[in-house]
Amino acid sequence: MGSKIAYYLLILPISYLPYFLLYALSDFVFVLMFYVLGYRKKVVLRNITNSFPEKTEKEHKVIMRKFYRHFCDLILESLKGFSISEKQIRKRMTVKNPEVVNKYFDQGKDIIFVGGHYNNWEMLALGIGLISKHIPIGIYKPLNNKFFNQKVLKSRQKYGLIMRPMKQTKACFNEALDKPKAIIFGADQRPGNPTKAVWMQFLNQDTPVSFGVEKFGKEYNLPIVFGAIRKVKRGHYDFEYTLLFEEPAKAEYGEITRAHTLTLEKDIQENPQYWLWSHKRWKHKRPDSLK
Image 1 (cartoon, rainbow, N blue to C red):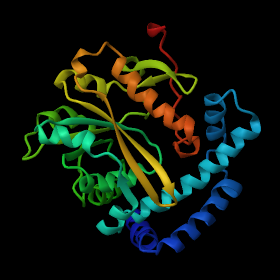
Image 2: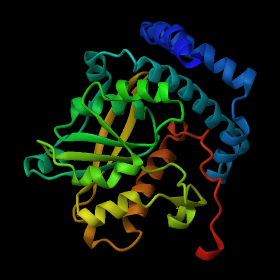
Image 3: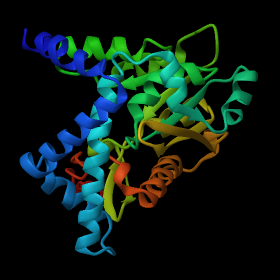
């Protein structure tokens, strides 16, 4: 009952706010979150400090403050997603080089699309079905709250994205659709099992990276494309494709995982405030069996 009350009396009314009021609310939430509540500030500052040891303490705190500014915009823009129109998505999300993936669509070929929790991935999820010729299928981890899980799924799928839970990942590759499909992975989250991950240096830290993109890329030998999201201005984003592997089956073990992770790392290093620093990314330590 509490979830329904929150959704209909708080989330939906916020979602329908015009953008100038939405960002005014974001500014207020920033003051509350950063100065009053201090939401995960220790986690955020530790992650930033460990990721950029060459920077000064003052520079770390500047990145942290900018992150919270963007994070609050991200929260409010995500709520806006429950009511955003197709016109607004097309206005706020621009694809720079669709030809990179369109050539595979014209060949009747599926692709694997990989990205990270950088900039506004929620807007990309909403808009990918509008900007892609491929049928997009997003792999996700279901929320524990069934009511919100249903609402989030309905929102994300309203403009063409198909959502599939992680346990159905393999079935997605074997699914026959009337057009070529793009299987979408968010590959920068902490893997559930660190013994089945690829361990590497990411942002100056020993990091386990999920193996799924590489596993399925090599098994089905589908082109692997990285998607970068860049912020143009508040509420407006560019989306750019980078082909990483045309024939993944020929790649060495770990090569694919390192490639997409280091591509994301480059974006983070250029504009660190746009990554999800509040995530406890480095909770796992390398198992003794892998040392």
